[in-house]
Length: 167
Image 1 (cartoon, one colour):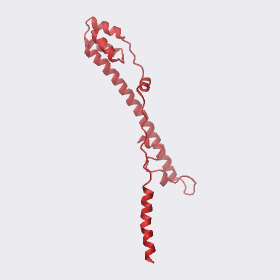
Image 2 (cartoon, one colour):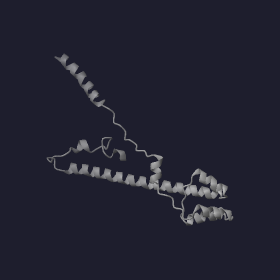
Image 3 (tube, rainbow, N blue to C red):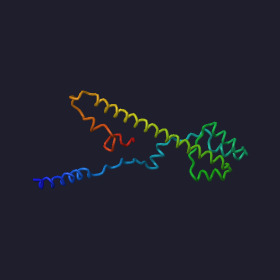
Image 4 (cartoon, rainbow, N blue to C red):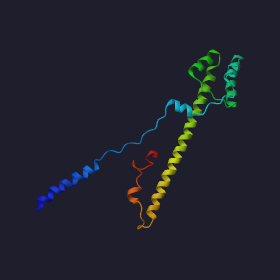
């Protein structure tokens, strides 16, 4: 009598292990944009102090600190190519001014990217809070109400959750 029970005891763990060894969950896909898309998304730089005026100030012998102060006061930004940088250097614009122009634009781009990332993170946190709130409301609902079973659908927020990408 004990003999037929033993094969079933060995089959049961094998079935459980087979059920656990399903297809692995795919990680979330990373959405990448091309350089052209990035350039289109970046706001155009505003140059209240034109490059020609910067060159004229440099040729007049104005100190680099004064040119930088004028650029900063006018809130001018420049997106310079390598060729433009070389041409400005040939025309006598000090290296400190060129460095400031590049650094100011780089900082602006990084600040814009950080602000966009913070907005996305805030939206994700709000969606996760809404999902957790909805789950808690399911727990509070009467037991006889039809609907999803909270103990299976709520926690943890894993790869099957629509908000997994946020975490």
